View 1: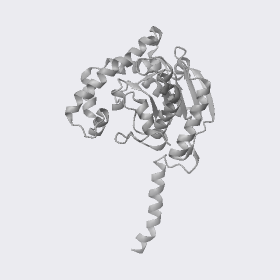
View 2 (view 1 turned 120 degrees about the vertical axis):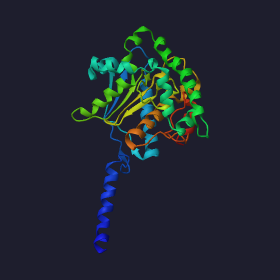
View 3 (view 1 turned 45 degrees about the horizontal axis):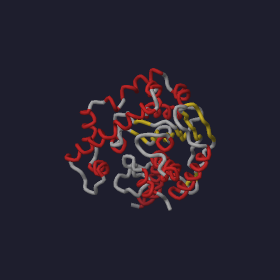
View 4 (view 1 turned 180 degrees about the vertical axis):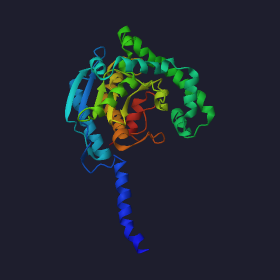
Length: 302
C-alpha cells in the first residue's frame, strides 16, 4: 500500500506532462502565440486591403488575443507576394490536377445529401438556427440552403472575368491547404498567417456544415500539421453579390470582423478549440451563412 502511495505523485506528474504535451493551448501566461510570418497573398485582379487597415488589423488581433487567451500576437516578419507566383512555387501542376477533381460545384447532389446525412443533430440544429435538435426531416432544408447559396459563390468567378476561371486553383482551399502543409517542411519550419485578397472555396470532401450552407464559401482555414492559417479579406473589399460592401456597418467594422475571423482560426490551430455550434456568443461559433453583422455583435469582446 505504501509503495502505491509513493508512486501516486509520479503518476500524477506523468499524466499532467502528457496532457500538456498533447494540448498546445496550454500556453504560459503572456506567452507569444508563436506565429513566424504575416504573409499577404495578392491577386492583382482583386482589391487589396489598404495599408492603414493592416495596422488596425494587427491592433485588433493583439487586443482580442490578449483578452480572450492572454497571449501576445507579434509575428516576427511581414511579407507580400503575388498569389499566383507564390502558389506556383509551392505546389506543382501535377498536384493541382488532382485537386481540381474535388470541385464542390461539380459534385453529384447525391454526394451532398449523403454528406448532410452524416452531420450530427447539433450541426443540423446550427444550420437551421433552432434550439431544437434536428432529426432526418431537417436534411432537405439544409440541402436547399446549399442550393440557394452555391450559385452566388459560383458567380464570383464571373464577376472577375474569364482570367479568374482559368486559374481557379487560386481560390481552391485544397490548394491553399497544400501550400500551408508545406510550411512544416521548411528549414526551420514556419508558422504563417496568410491573408489573401482572393475568395476561398472549400472543395474538400469533408466540408463542414457551416461552409456547405454558404454554398462552399470559406472565410478561412487552419492547417493542423503546420499550424499555418489562411483567411480571406475578399468579401469586405470587393464588389460582390453576397454582401453590400458600401454598407456603413462594413466600412466601419470590416477590419474588426476580419480580426475575429482570424482569431477563430487561431482558436482551432493553437488552442485545440472545436467549432462551437451551440453558443453563438463564442468566437468559435462559425459565421452563419453570411451574417457577419450579427456574428460580430455576438462575439465581440467588450
